[in-house]
View 1 (cartoon, rainbow, N blue to C red):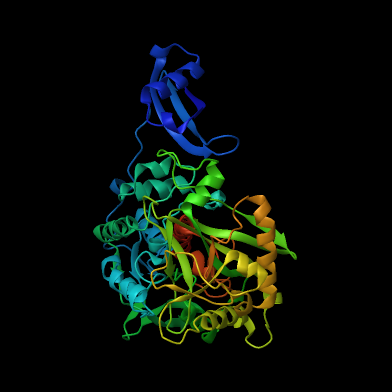
View 2: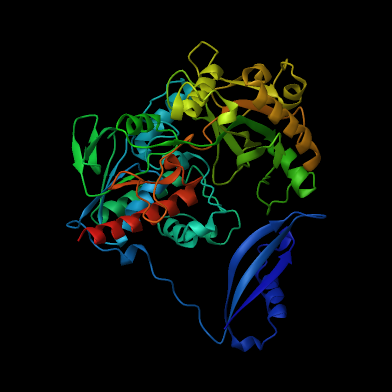
Length: 520
């Protein structure tokens, strides 16, 4: 029998094992000799009321021992001689599709336009320090995709998508801290994720899969409405009965290629805005209600959402103790994103602050299905206006943004390329600006102290999700018209973060197995 017990404790007692055990035993109400194990199952923080408290949920094993969980890695078969499946993209969707394919007896061949995580670092350094953007290797493209350098947040509300517990368990088996299994809002950190991603690749290769970098897909092999494979920029052909397309939300060339080949794609809603950067100490004081954060409490986070003129305005990808980074994927554009290291010990807090965008927000008569993408691209080019070729970002104090005036000075920032004062209120389309400004007026009452001249707004945050969806059949997950093509993950419009993308990759791999069975 397993009894579930929940206790609340002060941060002072977080590591007091004797006291924690005593509190749990007092709640179980059975003879203590019958208790075989007490295991922490979930940890969260309740910051309501006076002072933050930890909420700990335990599984107490009464008259039985905990069962040892089977290892995912140890159960994998060797698939060197198995039937192949092509996977385009080595992000969370692609790698977890590959692992699931191996588990189900298929041999994945993963193709990625970028570099492995180690080689990728040089290109990240180049964009940070020199403003040089490698279109195939940056914060969005390369091994691990955008998720490798975006904090490693592993929280999702999309639990119906699949077994999120299994995804976390696989990450732990590849070097992630065990705490992600119990934290209510788990994260890994951009300093630890590269090694974990590399370990995922080693497992794929060890059991017979293949991963090829610097392999940019430039053409598709199609015969009689059957998707047969792809061709890379060197002219190399890769063929298999099924191809999983998991290229991420920024692979614009793939969207254009799909369209050129007559493969149906659709425009979809997305979001655009800026990054908000506060001092982390200010956010801690607001959230925890105390001037100095307790050493046992993590850097605090927040989530804000409102409706303005029938459109959502919300915080996105909040990075406590984090950094703002340049996320452009082509020269001549300015895109910012956020990340945190594992300790989340930066003195800054940042979050996307965006408004939903749909076809009513832009002229969709000119570019057809690409109208939203074109709108996104034109704004990114507008924000790259400094003229010196750098990735310095335009910025404005939050209060000045609402008052529609340029900031004579700016607050310190974590953004390494640097920021400069600019009229974001004029650079954004007026209807987007109005929604953002009105939301700030609302948020200052929802979260007292959030609205402050101590915060910078840094633009442009425009890669929250893909402006394009690649439609697939709800039952088979295959493209609605193209047999053998399986759209997957964020780039296809079916995920919104590391965890949901990974689960989508697993789900698509299972559908590929079903497809292969039907072919027999």
